[in-house]
Image (cartoon, rainbow, N blue to C red; front, side, top):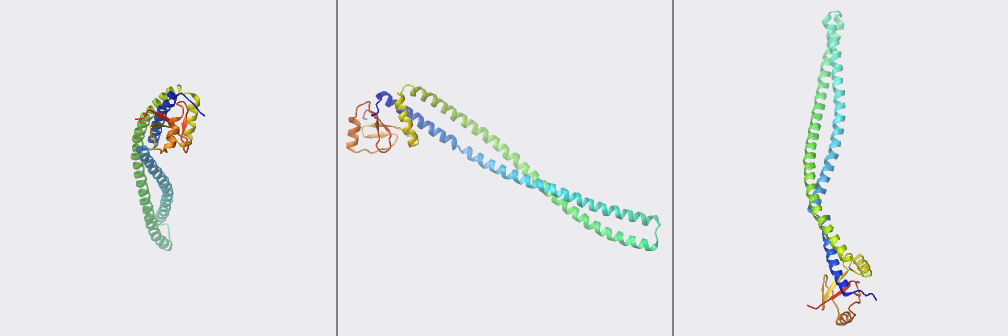
Length: 245
C-alpha cells in the first residue's frame, strides 16, 4: 500500500495542471497554422527548383543544338562564298561555271532551309530561357514568403518555448517538495495513460476527467486513511481526495 502526505498528494494536482498546460503548448507548437503554410511553400519551392533543373537541361541541350545549326549554316555559307569567288574570278570554263552556278542555287536553298532550322532552334531557346526566368522570379517570391513566415514561426515558437521554460521551472520547484516515491508513481501512471495521472475528487465529482463511481467505491475511497494513495481500479489514476464542494 502506497502512502504519502496529504499535502504531497494535493501538490500532484499542481504538477498535473502544469503538465497538462505543457502538453497543450507542445501540441500548439507542433500544429501552428504557419507550419502548414511553410510546408506548402517548401513543397512549391521544391517543384519550382525541379522544374528549373529541367529547363536548364533543356537550355543546355538547345544551345548545343543551336551551335550545330549555326555551324551548318556557316559551313554552307562559306562553301557558297568560295564558289562565288571562283565564278567572279573568270578563271573557270563555261561548263564549270554552269556547274558552279547550279550548285550555288542548291546551296542557297540549303542555306535557307538551315537558317529556318536555326531560327526555330533560337525561338525554342528563347522560350526556354523565358520559362527559366519566370521560374526564378517565382522562386524568389516564394523564398521571400518562406523567410517571412519563418520569422513568424520563430517568434511564435519563442513565445511558446518561453512559457514551457517557465512551466518547467515551476514544476521543478513543486516536485522538490513532493515525496520521491509518490512522484515516481505519478510519472509511471502519466506515461501509461499518455498524460493524465492525478485527478481531484470533490465528494463524488471528479475534476480533470469524468469518472463514475459506485456508492461502494466512493465509500471505500473516502474511508481510506488520508495518507493512503488511492488509485482508480480501471485506469490507475491517482485519486486526490479534496474537501467536498
